Image (tube, rainbow, N blue to C red; front, side, top):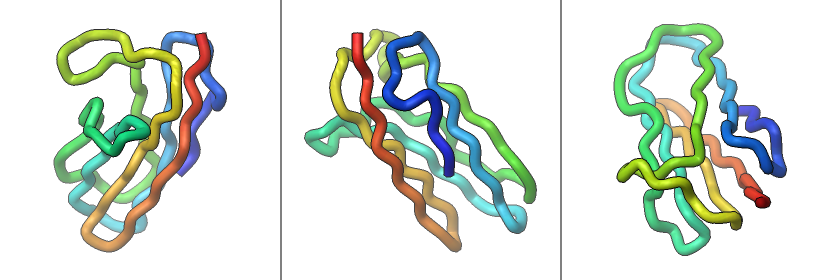
Length: 88
C-alpha cells in the first residue's frame, strides 16, 4: 500500500494497492485514538492495481482536522496499515 502525498496539506490523499487475486477489501481511516473516521472501501475487488482517493472528509461529510491518521487495508488474505500526517 502506498499513501501519497504524505504529509498532506492539500485536499486529497491517494492510496494505491495491488491484489494478487479477487478478494474482499475493507479500507478504513482511523484517528490517533483508534476511532473509525471514514470507510473508503468495503466490498469485493478484482485482482490487479487499485486506487482509492480520500477527500479528507469523515463519514458525516465534515473535513477532518490536522493530525495523525492511520489507513488500514484488510483483505481475506492480508492486512496493511499506513500512517498519514495531515497539516494545515
